[in-house]
Image (cartoon, rainbow, N blue to C red; front, side):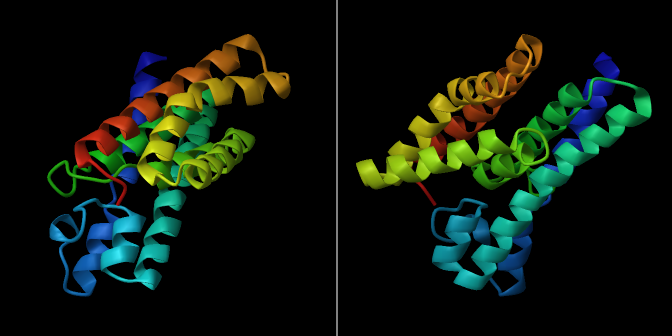
Length: 198
C-alpha cells in the first residue's frame, strides 16, 4: 500500500509540475519567473502576459490537477487499492508539483488552480464550496491575499463540514481533511514566500 501511494504521488507530482505558464509566457517572448510577481500561475500571466494566455494557463492548471486525481483513481483500479486514498494522494502530488516543478528548477506557482482541479473528480462540492468562500472573503475584505490565505486555513474544516453533510464515512472524511490540510499548507507557504497575490 505504501508503494502504491508513493507511485500515485509521483504520478501526480510529475503531472502537476508541467509548467504551462512558463511555456506559454516563453512562446510570447517572456520569462514568467522574471515577469510581474514571478509566480508561475494564471493571475501573473493575465496581468503581465495577456488575458487569453492567462485564461489558457488557468484551464490547463485546473486540468492537470483533475488529470492527476483521475490517474490516481485509475491506478487504484489497477492494483486494487483504496481509490479515494490513491486519488487524493495523486492530487496532493499535483499541487506539490505545481508549487515546486521539477521541470523548471523546482520553481512554481501557488497551486490554487491545480488544487481546485484535483477536487473535481473526488470531492467536487468541496472544491465548489471553497471557491464560493474564497470569492466571498475577497469581496468582504477587499484583500485578495488575506482572503485566499484565510480560505486555505479553513479548507480542512470546510472539507470535513461538506463531507459530513454528504454522509461520508469517518475514515474517508479524515483522509480528505488531511489531504486538504497538506494542500492548504503548501499553498500558504507559497503565498507567504511570494508576499502577495499574483
